[in-house]
Amino acid sequence: MTTPLLSLRGVSKSYGQVHANTAVDLDVAPNAIHAILGENGAGKSTLMKLIYGVESPDEGEIFWQGEKRRIASPSEARKLGIGMVFQHFSLFETLTVVENVSLVVPGTKKELTDKIIQFGEEFGLKVDPLSHVHSLSVGERQRVEIIRCLMADPKLLILDEPTSVLPPQSVELLFETLRRLAERGVSILFISHKLEEIRSICTHATILRSGHVTGNVSPRDFDTHELAKMMIGRDMPETIPAKPMPRGLKQLELANLTHIMEDPFAVSLHDVSLQVREGEILGIAGVSGNGQSELAELISGETVLPPSEGERIVMMGQDVSTLNAAARRKLGFAFVPEDRLGQGAVPELSLTKNSLLTAHSKGLIKRGMVNLSKATRFTNECIEAYDVRTPGPEAEAGALSGGNLQKFIVGREIMLEPKLLFVNQPTWGVDIGASAAIRKRLIELRNQGCAILVISEEIEELFELSDHIQVLNQGRLSPRFKTSEIQPEDIGRHMISSAEDVA
Image 1 (cartoon, rainbow, N blue to C red):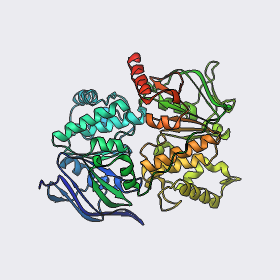
Image 2: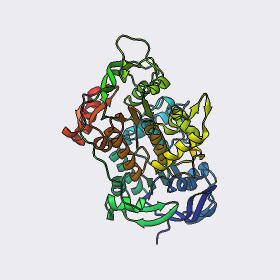
Image 3: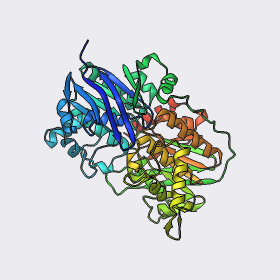
Image 4: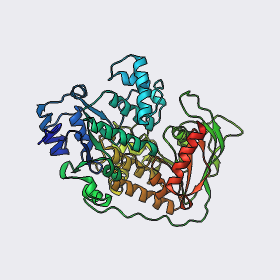
């Protein structure tokens, strides 16, 4: 038999009372595209960190090309030929793209700039090499991570949710690249919650549940429902259909909004108009980096409009253009940002203290003093209602898996009982079971009369959730489409044709 490129034997890792991995055995063959399947908190990301040298196993052995190895750091992993693209990016925000790449890839600035452009065009991962990372959207930052990893010419490429924020037209191009890499002898460890992707691209799959290996399968031998049940150990939650609602009051309105951003790398908004009524979900589709972040900043209150006769943002019938985020929340506005670790939560604080960030108005603070028992009760209710896998309310937010932190933040905001909820990338990095649960909660909230605005790069998600869809491209918003009267392919074509028109 061919010697595996990578083997793990009895690998275990714990964090206090939390057993992230327990006696894990894994073999990754040469030229294989090997999936690691599991719901949020199953131990997938921890296992990848052990392979990449970010963490060290408490027990067990790692073999690289048949030889026992102790991988003590990412630099040692890269020397062996192991590269990794993290779900939460490892980029320096104050540096440019090319400066970030130069930290791990040798070459002059001119050589690296040319390579970044070349790789971007070849793999459909275009990004400006001279842009500062802080000015890039989440999707653009992931492109930088993937390019940087590919430029290091790895033998084993670890991809943690690589397509979660890529536009649909780039996913198949990336898959073609991965297949070419596998043909050239590169093995790929692929983590994704998109089971159709797993079936399309992967030749092998190892299933993790609660840190244990529960199976090794060929994913193409099973349909997505069977894979989902293997992964989560139960049937998928049933989707609640969105019931027809009478036209309610407008809770959000932007009319002909044109806003030129001061940041030269940001996308300015041009003639943007939208409205969201009670009992309605409006979805915003589009390729990452086309003004989604800038639009989110304006609606959330992170960026406040200067006084102007022409530009207005209206919430619950009140002009909020010059109001900050806290003032907008007092009107009944709630917000789930796309950057859950940077904006949605403070990683070093407990979940209870993170509840206080936005839920303090729910009686958690009185006369300037924190009511700790109420704050803890609120947090426990959120943990239980949204199936957040955590040791308890005092766990640090940064210790949760990405999907569990997302469930906590979404739950926290829904528990505020908002009149208007704005959710940016609701299920990014969330497993299939939790994604279905979050969408179910949003539809329940919509059926109760809440107005909901959703930005998502998942076209299928928008069609499942939305009553109407608009497409954002180069800072311009398309007309409003009724979801029941259009197909996903039509939205995809509209996105592509819009891009060509702008170019």
